[in-house]
Length: 189
Ligand SMILES: [Zn+2]
Image (cartoon, rainbow, N blue to C red):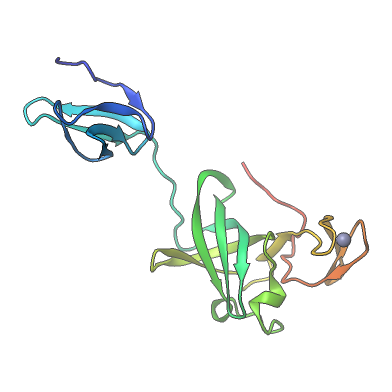
């Protein structure tokens, strides 16, 4: 019994044992009398307490205030946009975090609404303000922040920069966004 589970690697959903054997602990859950892993990590058992837990093996990268992130716009309203954060400081994430861009923290003078500045599917470059109410608050106040990649809302073609506007390479449709000054360049490691 001793060492049976030592250093065994599990992923979410892996069967670890049954509740007759162990008491499920951190990183595990019980389903139909079986103990399953809820994390990717190493199995750890406590033979005295008959507990089993999973210790996560990767250090999870979390957005911090001041970090620069790339995010994909999911939905927009007049005053805010919901986004998925896909990278932190140019490092692509394996998972994603939910973010919110609010018009009041972005001080976009020329923009009357977020809806006219961003469209669902756009890739935006933002700065992290902080974490509150289970969501990361982002802003795109400076000229370096804003949309870096967007597709035509009419035909799905790639929009290229044309002065202060964006122009579809396929149908010549002209669109407006809050454009980052390095529109078209995405740096991801
Ligand atoms: Zn088009």
